[in-house]
Image (cartoon, rainbow, N blue to C red; front, side, top):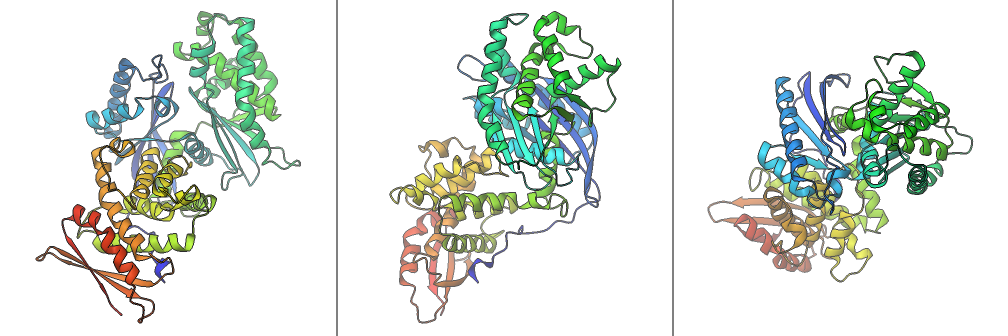
Length: 539
């Protein structure tokens, strides 16, 4: 069958017994890094080093751009993190950026600078993807026993609310309320005035209302979910509570609990305290003292709105989730969390279903695309498993723009993919998928196209070469009836020719429309690979 081409990588590499990996989370308030030792045989990982620096990426200019001096601090911090990771012989440093970089108009410029100056690639992830990876991080530390748990992560720029029972996440959300964001925009007095406090409280409730309502709709009336809290803000509140209660902070915060009533007492204390009085709290840094009230109020209002009376701390979150996601992508997790290993494929198919994609046609196009990719691997290109998977996603979704209109549907496909909240991918990968789908027909990629010219050069090359393969694959199912059973390729280096042989399902079928369409679409392939495309029918 045409659609039987596997999504497996083009080659398998045997895994060493232990692997060292570093993960960096570029948050709105702080930059964090964990270095872990992965044991593929379990599979599990142990944390061997942690690093943190408060950089305040969220301290932006009036127009929302990242400040030059803040970018300099961040790059210096990232370089230091790289050096530390190198001392542990980390094989890779995986870095993700969240709301501050995501929302800044010059966020992509910052990512490019980091890549150019210190050779570190940063994955920009959506709020939904951030929530998904937080969920993976928490699951790496806690057993949910198939019972519903709500996870809340309060960052500098956003708050994630997640519902899950240890399997596939039941609800993921990211809301633009964070400790740094709210402090900067709404806290102007010190101690905070009653008017400002009440306004801040009402604003938080208004912003969280939709996410709380949607999450609650996924909970059965008979169920009482447990609340799990992650992030520096919540850990700081747990430490404050522990010192108030017993005079000492526990060595390990994971599993520590406190109640909503106890939190309300802490919030009341913080609202009456000045910045310098908050600095006197043992263990609280100067930067944390500035923003802790807003963060505490977010947690209080979320607990009230969710109707939950206590919270349990988990010290693993986004950066550990980045580790788990890396292990899933690299095939190191087979049993526990198995559902997440196919999150990309399931997310693509969900989007395809949402936009009424003809899946039979899409799967034939995807199969032809991967067949072309595999038969030209290390002959015409050296792209690997990652590019292969992105090409598959683009092939499945290339026609989704028909949901809007047939006219210019390739352009509509770009926007539906770009803003369709695909899970399992970072923003650059989504941009690549969207561009590949955009160029399955009509105009070839041009630097004057906004969505294309913003891509770094190495990514534009992927779009150029891989979209040329997708164009041929679309032509091979021109009638959308599965007329072609398979294709075989031959490279004639001496003649600078690439022979594409079509094997029809029915020997009497002349496949005239497919041959005509291939002739029409061969320009991109011939231009990119510098070869003449010769197509023949092999009955």
